[in-house]
Length: 339
Ligand code: AHR
Image (cartoon, rainbow, N blue to C red):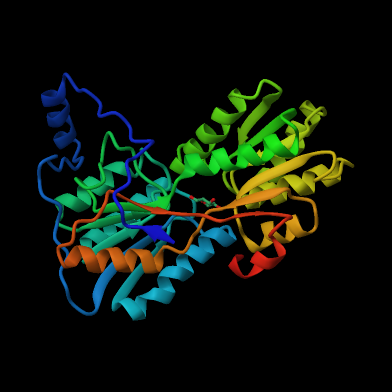
């Protein structure tokens, strides 16, 4: 579910002013950093079958990532794509080198979720310089370095700030605006973590009865979420709510809460983001309060955008994905959307 209408970027970052632009540029060239010019046109996309497409995944440690990868595998034949796939195993530098190798192989199109906003921005410029068009999916890069519509075709993804708002709105209602919250953040430096935090924290700030008593990264991983929650529970036994940036960390937190002899969903309300099958089962079991869906099904959207772009259509800088919302009122009838 996405609209191809032009979306204004609520979270668009201001362009940095660089007084020392000349010397920094020289320095960058000296260190071999790509320096595509802002006014260079975006590379064109050839129309041929098969189209060689590079898909560089960040990691494969959770159902969300697996569903995203599967969505590209499933669409490949239908879209006439021959996909080269890599997995960075949770490493920014590996994701960069995976993409560098795809550039060296002269793929026709690059599609990837940048693991973190800043480390993955320069490679977008390198691809542009090599004449390879790029579509970013799921997460975005630092807009002060590489900009959608100028350096890459578009960003296809959810509004992470809005996801944070929706999670917080649910928690405000569920707790009558009174909560001591532990926030389990996603991967530090990832746009998904930055914006989910921003959105949630904005709503909490407007509710004087709600306090974030601790906020720490669990790296979007179940076991890390469990370990962090275990430690934070000891330091903050008065916690009454948890906001996890994804379902996997929420499931880890549920395990830690049970191990501490408390009842998730009763003693501690939990809200999260993703809408995985595991998250939905936990809602049905009454342990998880709600999950804002974050759709991982980018394959068909990326195929559609690529075909339109190759025909010369104007593509909006943000192809926004709209997400469902699950709580006890609708989880049973929504199970078919779980992954
Ligand atoms: O960028 C999307 C996030 O990344 C998903 O919420 C999470 O599960 C994944 O690892």
